Image 1: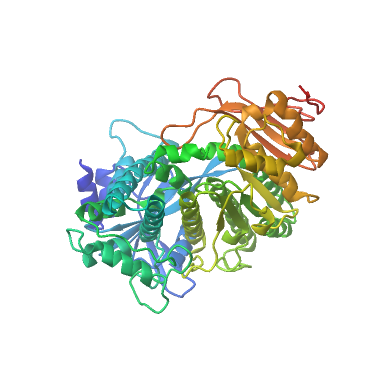
Image 2: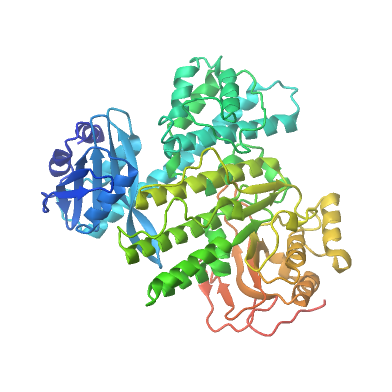
Length: 633
């Protein structure tokens, strides 16, 4: 049958007919469950279908996230793998299984999908089609769960590609609205601000950001209702909206935002139908499925490609980011969590680790669109959520020893960046707030509530300046809990401008050598930044920094200040999430002053996964195992 017919049955709340007769599941095998929520009301949840231990439950009514989480926890005591549907005449909320990686294994969590009855919903159709069972053969439970999870992953990838194209459409249409003789830097600045604001509002529509005071899909509805189809009034309306969102006294369906994103006056020139249509098409994307970590590559595709190359910047794929962050500090934190969780005094050790997470301060001094700080923040928030979940299990559902909306210790203002170009800096600040919202939604799914973030009170600070001329201490004071990591620009002597060479010479001082790549300026700055402090730092770099005469001046400075290589990835081909991937070969090196077990990763062939070498006692500047040495030639 067609997916349209599946949607029709769902819209009519005929969920048992949908699963038994059209999706080919088996009959229910568990009696109804009654749950009395903390607020006092009682809800009955009915098992409407099952398949090899996976059960589908339906609840008449949508009681809100907090109560939904309570009901789900009650059902979880009888059904590990489950779909839970909350519904009324107007809409329904499906809580689906989703992939979550824990201790190198995949476990099931639930994620929330809202469907408004009668409205087109292609992602919802795709998910229903994914769980339609074949009539000619049996499949096992793991295969079914995998199909559902894969459907989510594929949908997210499709939405990401679609979103990139639509963002390019908006950029082009907005660029055409400006006069031909417009000042180019001013034009690019205003377009970057405008698109970052629109991105924020579309993401807010899809992540329940306007609750409880605002309306769902408030921005999309604003474009539909408040602007004319020909786009003639769009610029004026957007200008007014952006001003109102920075004014606490104005009442609108989108609540007061505050924060740097809306506080700068920008006057958008007259627009047309083309831009309005592009915005509405972009509003149809499910932005909640898109990782803010790809925003950098998305926005790179809509600007002149040469702009990025002139700055020597390469947007970083997530697997390369984790190659840096995991061995630098995340692996150790996760191992500490595993030890604490299984310890007889688990609560004490978990709280100690939780406090430790809140003491970490992280900075990327070449942050681009924020890929590194986004992934670092997300991973620490995920670990924090696991700690909170474990503490709840130890205390019991009715003995929660903390307020999940007030107790968070990993916060946006613990993360900092330096970026020479304003465009990616704007995207980084926006993406960090949106990542924060995604993390809050995970918290809400588990505990039924999340902090209210609007108006914005806390945010990540990105300083727009050259990292080689800025005193890093003014951005984030150095300390034992400070972590520096990122992907600085790498430029050989023939690729550098005179200004970049002058910056490099100033950083290195008397230690300067003409063979040093531009990226080594960040190494020198990191050494100076930490001074006598302990800490952790790591950079992705071109492999040429470990070749020829450059090795001696680079590592002389590093070793004189007592730094040792904590981990290293030997040469591997670079991959980027941006179109026209950067054709370079890279290494990653991480440093600490105290190194118990150095980790060295090899690559058997181009494109192969990294293989950790066993028994390494010390990593040399040439990324081999042995005593530290270098050649002066």
